[in-house]
Length: 102
Image (tube, rainbow, N blue to C red; front, side, top):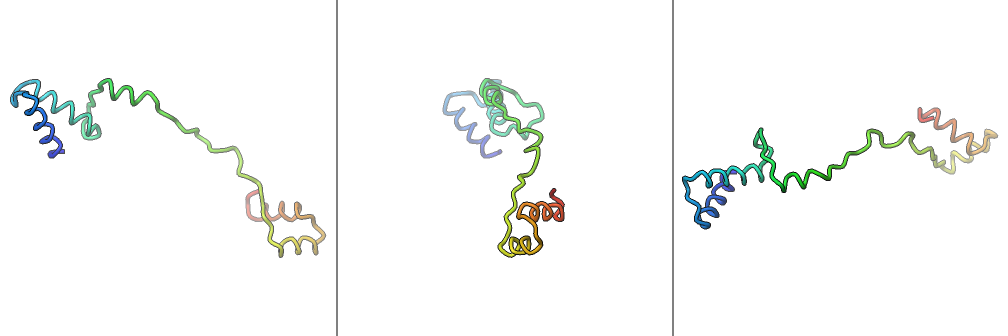
């Protein structure tokens, strides 16, 4: 922050602003608050700040109502379902219950 303030000081001196004037201190304060707003409790809002804040986007509180309900069975699981006399869907439903997802 100090280095930035020195840079602003140099720019103001080049523009001919007197280093001990009210305008000088207001300009330094304005630039510091614009670049480092998190360092100041009372942020001064100018037109640029107000324009950038108008487009806030808020995410929904929930991502989705339910998790996707797709299951991929391995060939071993498909063979086991067949031996037990179950369809793949029945086996997958029981698998989901056992895992706590159904």
